[in-house]
Image (cartoon, rainbow, N blue to C red):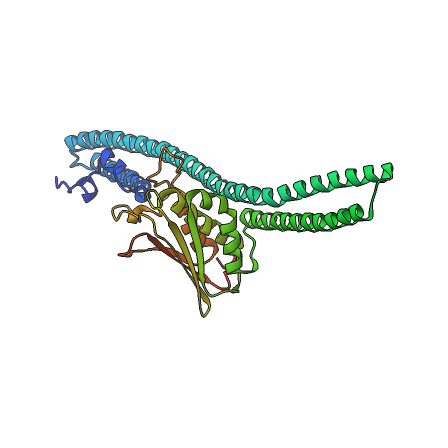
Length: 360
């Protein structure tokens, strides 16, 4: 009897372990292909066995070998199915872990955004405290003066000179109270607008250098405590149509990064923000005269959760958030500028007219 060769499908079986070690994107398809290949082998062997039994030249040993091979193939198919089920379970666990990681990262990002808003609240609260304090002191003095003039009136000892002094004090005090309340009102309105911008990231038209001045004012108390001066140079009154909340948060994050890391051991800290308009692009250079960034970690500064300040309040998200805001919200780019001089420099570029949500 002429025995035909076993098909090539039988020659190179793939082990379960090998299948499990394949790339995640292709392992499922390879498992299914392996099962289909084994089912084809079973069909070929069954056809040969049936043909051998129905012919005069049938060879019982061939039939027996076929049955043994069929049994092996079925066991192999079962192993592959188990491997496929195991892979499904593993993929489900990995997907759940990824979802948990993404949720945790989003929570940390929101926490970092709230921390930036907290810095703004602290700065505005300190600024409001001054005009409100002046107003309270002035009103207290005017109240005392009014009680005194009323006493003189009731006792019949009120003189023209006393009345004139009282009127003069009322004018001066009223002017001081009005200017203090006006200053406080402007600060409150500024805070409301800045907080709304940071919370919603609404696109609107605004003056870029004025927005940066307001952002620096919100950090004034921290700047005073750290003895750091801020210099805003370049073009002024630049009107852009963009996202003020994103710009505010990027500048705040860069400044807080400098204040937290750059000025230890520096007697006179300086932050310089230079603003230029190049046709339809804004080029903003942020620089400080601090200790600079170690070259060994430059490649990691925009990575999430990377910080050299861990254990001291650093989450490692400030520059990562700034990078994403520049790219995904402002439609621009934030990059570190390697410089031979001391300190740290960043270049922020973004369009004068930022892309809308529908264009991103």
